[in-house]
Image (cartoon, rainbow, N blue to C red; front, side, top):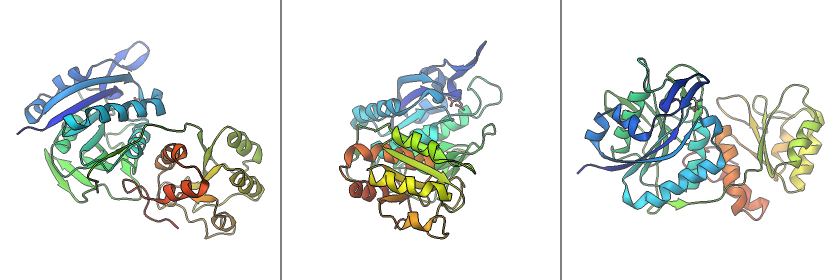
Length: 329
Ligand code: ASP
């Protein structure tokens, strides 16, 4: 029997058309499917046109909207494919990984670097590959299918702004390849008997990317406006001398501080250098280790509304979700 897949369209380049003001999403979910007739031969598809946005305009309220749409339709379908702009797709995939946990059914995000109507485009193959994965049986939870690779939702990052090879899997292998319509799967993600849906996010989360010479004023500015702050420091992690006190103090005032690194691969290890060791020894300061920034930011947004104490928040932060963190103290 054919699988039933819900196709949720949100916009992005894949659905974009040329306008006088640049590329803008205008093609409907039905229009996208018409461009790839093989999809309807493969499965029964229903369309939901949720948004029609460049993903630059997608944020937490839309992540909640996507999660809600999946929750409301969860029982009626075998899997979900979302078309989405590539620019913030890694954030949406990470956010959905926290909002929908333990799903046995595949929830696949895809998109393209070139619109579906262009002569040279990655749209059609990405869309078809996504439906092939959604029907393949061993895909569970949230993932991105792009350029022949399947990447866990918490591990994706956009690493090329123009080429078709737009996404990489960071600090974790991609879980499958899709080539010529066949899936070669190396890792089967875990799932639970029943998925757990969450419906709240705290948007007061900020990210500070350090530059040499960064001063406390920038830190305090963000701290005042945030419940949690991810600090992308240098190398394996640490802070310039002048910033330590403000960070320890903010943690004592109840802010969640996560030390991370702006180096894309291999993650942080705060305890190595004198510039990081005092932070690693402060139980109120958290460390991202091998997590992506996209995952750290959205995990904080998810865990803040459900943690009443810093201890609970730390516990949740270090508890792996969709393989988002391997090394944790
Ligand atoms: N600006 C587009 C978007 O993120 C880029 C893309 O989809 O490739 O919606």
